[in-house]
Image (cartoon, rainbow, N blue to C red):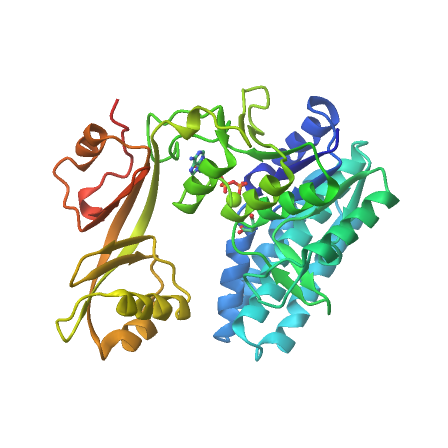
Length: 430
Ligand code: ADP
Ligand code: ASP
Ligand code: MG
């Protein structure tokens, strides 16, 4: 039964967490054929901060971040392997490599520099985890995802070369019976330049591996027992969903259920591989399974929040209708700016669209539209999306809140409220 496991940053955030993961694999659960591991804890954010310091040439800040990243990893190596281990030397070598590369990349385009820097978190974490698993007797082979996941050169949002990737993974699997442990989030071009698959992309890496290995199951180990009908951190009475279909899961991740990266599901769906979401904190708890068959999650209401949204209210300056030609023009400008409309609300004379906050993308978009359109901007908004709602439920959620924009289809309702009118933690009306 070839299985693939994925462990995220929280499951390896410190030495105790890595020991827990080791115990789980040594005694608690079936050994996987392959496993994908993210960067430790908040390392990816630290690497982004280091990159920002490098780009603005703030040497002091850059050095601070580099030292923090080195120290965090060396502290875990010390706790697991004692002083002066081989692992510590390898971690230091990787941090030195990162430091040395900065001089060369500072003049390069930002997305390329991003990938050479931020992908380092997974190389560090997998070095630690693979060594620990071998130390406790789980025979593990550290594999470099840059030699497995072949991508194009669209840095930060690389596309997979599926045929080449499958071939590389299959030939690696034929070589070794050990647990194959590799990095999430990263790949490389044919020429060997490191690429990344988008923030939170390790789930996607695990799905790529599962498909290439013909796995029977992909298990993603999280700090929650499964997929809920809303983020349990934001909705006090969120309930776990035992089963739902790929299609429903795709809808929910598209609208902002942040528990699984949206790109994860396509390879699994293509190969008919079920995805199980389990808790590394409570491995015995019943999980959630996403597969080809519909489950109760396909019918029940589910809730997704997006914070800090920006509303653009666009109307033609000449007072004309928002016909197809104008809609096409506005949406083309949006795509050119690299923005995605989380909500589209269209009327005869105005189009309202809601996007994530990104001033560096919004300014050029506003400039591009300014000649022909009046654009009003509202900030600090909360977008609530409800799958499978009914009227009574929506009325109770709306309460007295102002609806700045909305959309309703047969299966999905969306509301844009001022954040000031929304609570930090919500209650699903029972
Ligand atoms: P990883 O460690 O794999 O990166 P994430 O932090 O990305 O894990 O995902 C787990 C988190 O997703 C949970 O802690 C939870 O707060 C959040 N989350 C958001 N939406 C949901 C949902 N619908 N069901 C379960 N968890 C959710
Ligand atoms: N480490 C990467 C991130 O934090 C990828 C992942 O964790 O999935 O975005
Ligand atoms: Mg994640």
